[in-house]
Image (cartoon, rainbow, N blue to C red; front, top):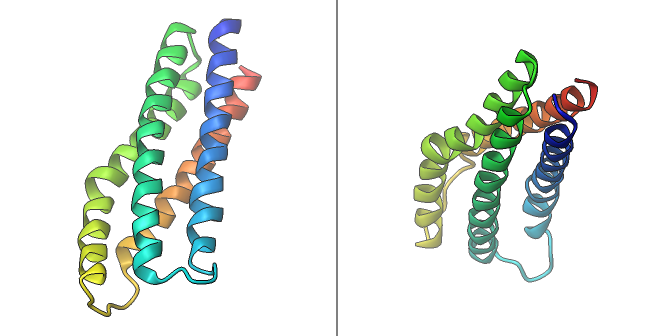
Length: 142
């Protein structure tokens, strides 16, 4: 990969990784432990935060795809880029709609058990973290 593309891809990958770690694995679970934060307030905050994260992820994915495509990457970097960019799309298309419907019900006052969709979302976030980490390392060593 050429040096400029590799530098951009590395920076974007690790910024994206940091955002996912900070929001999905730190902010999301901790907000429900804060004094005075009820489930409806936490869900409302979560919706806003994850909507913003998903928008930024889409922008970072586009920049990452462009940097990698212009850089003449090895196949492993191309595959990891594609996988990393595809995961948020899967989350938005397949998992988030179920979570949104469930949170609508909770916000309407229904008491519901923990959802499997939430566990699938956490699993895809974990895969995304591993994919971004592998991508960042691969770009650094390419």
